Length: 416
Image 1: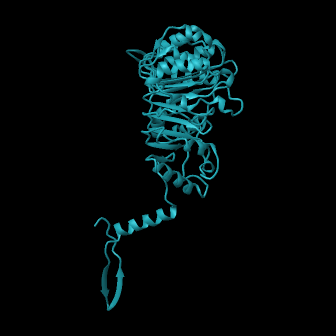
Image 2: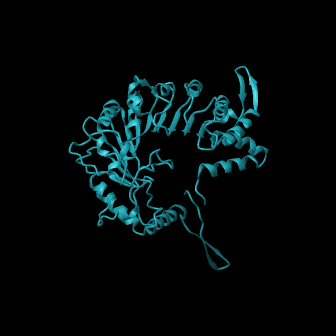
Image 3: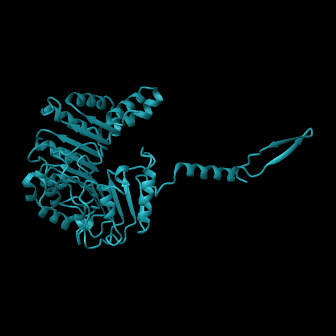
């Protein structure tokens, strides 16, 4: 089967609409729920589709299809995407999509201030997730604009290019923001320092190129401001947990570009932290002061060949560094994305059981990506399953005699 990409998913949804009238009614809201605008020509087609189903209501012109739109993704890499007519078409689409909840903007050209103000005016009281990407040295959106989205829950500033002007802004407040996605760059981290986030509990921090890495002073100020409220911290690799890379890709695979997990485990950094996720490419945790709050650790990019206890590997180094005396309240260690049953290595179950028993001595559950604590072999599992079936469903044998011949009839009576 082909990979499940947004493009293929959109083709599938478009095909479902054409099956019959009943399927058209059911699939149309699904088709328009997530719209991707790749070029000015595609924007014009989408606007025409939205305007072809407009009705008049007491609140004004309402597009039936526009009410279905929840996620809008915009790209400006195509020819003529920098033109003012393209932005005008986009704004008309915005007007017809009053129930939009997720806005993903990938901007390759400068935006007029009126266009930015128009977005904040339309969606400031309704937008829940904002993903902002620009490729300029100085962004055309600032923390003041961001604070206009006062209902936002998720904010992605990995590719924010605020530059040195960001700290000049006064503190802006996003009262409902829960999840902040940043890059370890100076611009991205500085933008977070200009935001007051009273509801923040989750941070995703991706690495950036060493030339744009934020200074230690920026990190200390960030942890002083937002560290006490953080409950979960995720440190994915440069490729991350989604297919989109950051605007400035990493050169090489040096560990210096990866944020150290122990940064968030230092005394008074994140005292309420209970979940930490990092990759095997991250530096190994070496802390002297135990972290009392951590409950769960997730290790990403784990492979079966790295779990062999008799071979040196980054995975083994990370797992050996997780000790009860360092994390006295730790409950779970999970290999995020690694599924034992789906692995082709014949010894994957055996080495996973070894680590399960190793952590069991520390009173810690060792789980794979599906949350399974250890594995029995498939053969043993099949035997137990068959035994259970026999006990439940074959209760007794009825012997019936016909014409002096003895015939065994097995009566299957389950539930008795």
